[in-house]
Length: 491
Image (cartoon, rainbow, N blue to C red; front, side, top):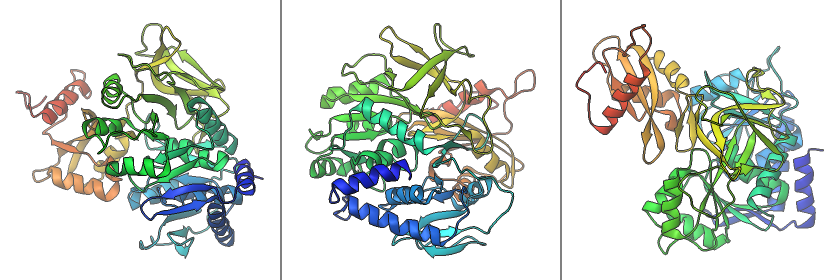
């Protein structure tokens, strides 16, 4: 039997009426029995569809109430699940389906089906679309979840994450953060992302920690949700805490919500200090990657001028390897442990899955207390409010847009989101404008991947060797965002 299923049935047997999923938008609470009943129904429908074993199911369920039962059903059926951001555009979803040989797609009911699919109801809020049978396609019998990641180069990748790795990661996280079965967590981050999956969904299934689930981040409801359901833990991303510092909840910060965790993007010391000065509560930095699960957590209560990500979690080993741009006494972060994925689907990642672990794209050093300080990145993805976006993916989309001769995509600092996406586009002829570029992207990409700014250039700046002058292009983009165009129009 699946370990996740076994752990959940133990919860069900011991406390069938245990409240697990609070849905404040409807006022409904799902008990352990409710979650199992929904999961069993979904499992039976998946089995009736006779999906090929080892081929994944893509899920666009997002933060709907049946997202957690779907994960439990897939473990009961032995089917790998690939959670995808609910806002992902259909062309991107179909591309992922083809690349990873998906057997089916789960998405909210009501949307017209893509050509060549068979649609049937999965539950009240979800449909399942099965793809035509195919031969000689990859299968992933050892995977519980294929977790999407931006990778360091090229198109998004997917990790082959076993059930043991999934469970071990959650056990490491709950141990480090002191999250117990009696706790309740606010679920404001996407369950489709590795962070939400490990900290919220799997934690609910393996130890019965309840969550307050909303489809999106609704800041004005946070105090009400926390106090209504007695939530103690709030996993968020930095821009959420910046938002509350600038816009305090009416009545102040809820006293019950005391364990605040930030991941998904670098947590700046200024953010920690502003929040602490206003509310008297520290936001704790949590560091992990899709490939490794949780890596380190800052469990201290002191507020310092330098933000660290804390000490490695129990069961996780961090070593610093030599790397370009590494700080003195530091290196590139290598992670080993029983929660590390085995490889990428369709790409064994031989250059990064090395020495029994994973070589991240992060650079760092240890301070005098043995806390890990991250100092930079080897790879070049853009971090938009905790969501990692690979510039190459957007460049590929825009390269296929009629009228585009050349394009580069950059990340520019943004006080609210961490970074914003800027597309620098060279048109083939006059007439191409920023609005049409954004509209084209919106038709092919998830909303958070659509460039917030578009620069129309006569040409991309080049170095004396004829290569892209990235520094000059970044300076132009930063100046454009700041409203200070440089005097030289080619810079």
